[in-house]
Every structure is written in structure tokens, then in C-alpha cells.
Length: 71
Image (cartoon, rainbow, N blue to C red):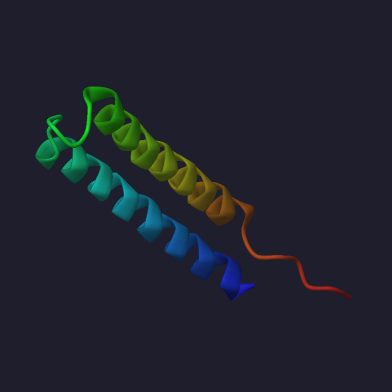
């Protein structure tokens, strides 16, 4: 079914976006008066965790292939 591969493409894009946001967060947001060091590292880890999960789900959906046709 083509929706399954299309859904895998969406998961891949969301995972890459989450990875990009995580790295940009870690690069530009520095601990200071508003956020402590623990919060900035925690949010970075959250985005990276989302990215890993979404990318692995995308890979597993691509490997499963299309559903077999019913007789």
C-alpha cells in the first residue's frame, strides 16, 4: 500500500527536523538566567530521542514493504 511508504517519508522528515532542532537548540541556547544547565541538556536529549525514535520507525516501515493483496 503506497500510504505506508508515504507515512515512512513523513516520519523520516519529522525525524530529521527533530534532529535539526535539537542540534540548533544545543548550539544557540546557552544556560543562563532563564534556563539552567539541566533544562537545556534535557530538552536537547528530548529532541534527539524523538529523532532517533522517528528515524527508526521510518526504517522499519520501509523494510516491511507493501501489504500483500487479499485473495
